[in-house]
Image (cartoon, rainbow, N blue to C red; front, side):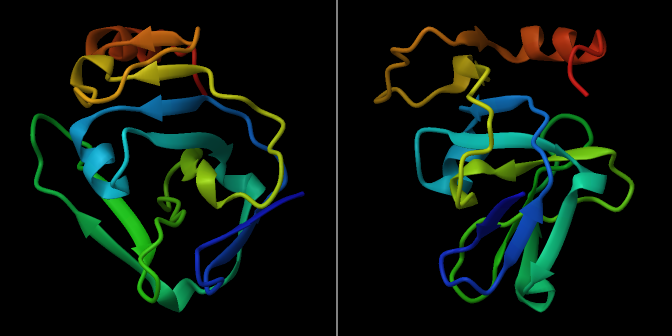
Length: 146
């Protein structure tokens, strides 16, 4: 069991297993929502996720659509502002903010995504695969991810 929580501990959850992908997203919206160079998102199956506490604290913001659906949706704790998982009702899997995890999920980052939009002050220096938007779309169309 992998547990996680927001900064104040009001929103707590557990995941029986992480399945990936484990992506480091460099798009401008992820950078702005995190205040960092990228967001570390870890894929989990909805059936493997359980919210233990804090449902009443979860707030969401849906950013205006830029190109095509789905919209960019961020969920956060209304008390401390930490990003929190909030699985869509109809999703088989979704990504949780990996920084909220209390222990080792048994996965390591797979790749950087939206690298063409990365912050100019950040240099990617690891050996992970780097995908731009078109490569990511092609990968997901092939069904290589869940």
